[in-house]
Image (cartoon, rainbow, N blue to C red; front, side, top):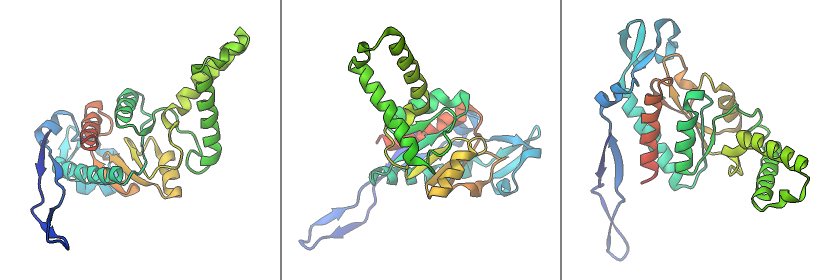
Length: 249
């Protein structure tokens, strides 16, 4: 995945007559051969094709639909542009994937980018009942702070053990959204079929959505789609790495 920085050649004159050169734009030159090696082009079996995904399919291989990687590259770049613009505007981004094989990858990328994430079961009402959920998150943060300050040592061994067990459970539920003090502006979904509940809540609250759309999913379900294999770890890793590299520039 090679990167190429292109400078916009337009110049603008200020009132003082000084010319200003517009900022450089960074685009990624996606290599479809490299993308193919990750399995990004392999969709689901022909029987599971969503009718609206027809335009993103170029053929069939062993009863499996093949995704057009030229379109994947095009839409991935569009999604990256949206996320880069969001970052510049200091908007909040949340990444969601409750697929067990992707938990480590998503957590790692989210932490490197300093954004909120959900990799465990989606907490119903995280958006639609945000204030109530936020109180639980605040409780978790307060309990964690007390442990770090050694304030739990004043309790009996049994009481301390109970609080530490509770803290462990809360960490699993709320650790990824501890710093999410408001409903995010954008949510990135690795699989909109599996994580349909957060998608529904995002729509209900007007949260913009970006999603990896496999051949069994509805491309109109999100605001910005990336047609690609959402099951192969290598495929999702390629997409997340492209996003990460762009956001860290």
